[in-house]
Length: 410
Image (cartoon, rainbow, N blue to C red):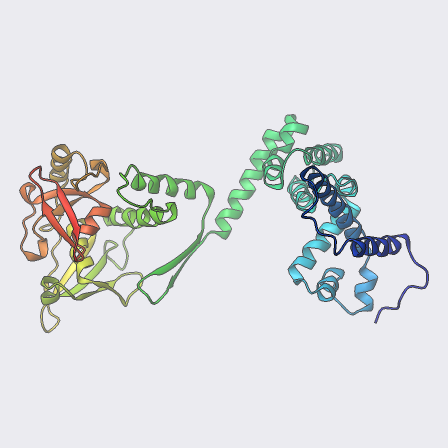
């Protein structure tokens, strides 16, 4: 238990007066305030909020004795417990309080003047902390002053971008070398924290969570963009995140396993096993043997993959014996694909303009039903329409022009 003060400190007097003033207007409606005065009041309260936050943080920075008296690990945890906020929030407040109380006094002054809000203060402190530890103190002081001044013009997001380049403003003579060192540190940290996780959801989907370096992420996005445009919109616009998800699947299907490292003594290969009778039937299921053994896909998807994907189909007989491990007979050759590109120029689905290099060769008569891998039986379809061609919910009609028209079955 912390004892009540005998003599009021000016900060405590201020807090009590503010509470009394706010209580006096607690029931005053704002709806009748003229628009001009609303603007004045909102700006004023925003300034006061920054000033109040600085005063609270000033007290928090000096509250180590309070935490010790209450057996708390630090004043941030004590504050979280007393105000029913989260401990991470309490720790963030304490870190900011210590930073502006002992190191970044200009940031504290900006908040005290109502010119720097708490979000801006966190961004400025983070930007200053990210500067080299051996940076000249005068350069650091100029950087702090510049960012505090810019807080009057830019929001936290813009300040964060400026903060990353602040040395170019206050010390251009050292900025280039320091930026190179900072980038090397970032890249090293990115390589050390790089991760990729797979979590099957049990509903036919797998959630993928990854953290990769910016350079690789940029390359991946560039590759995916090649699969997402151009596409003629014939209905509701597909959200970009869904387009990128579909593009990622298409990219995986176009990877050449011959260029991947050997795995298990053989070229890296995903194998689909399916019973011969199910391969020929409308319904059925197939097993995937690869990274997530035990995964199942429909026979429809297996038939689509048999067209062009770098996946080895293993067709099994009634007793599980392997009837066929066909690859060459079902895939169009490089020369045939070039000929299809010259002939078709783009996806042959009606109204689609996806260029030929982004399309897949499709058997008009399914390979699983005896279709031939020749030019007369081949046609180019983009990834989206190739899925439609193998989707039993859709009926395919060959038009006089040679294009394919898809109808949703009733």
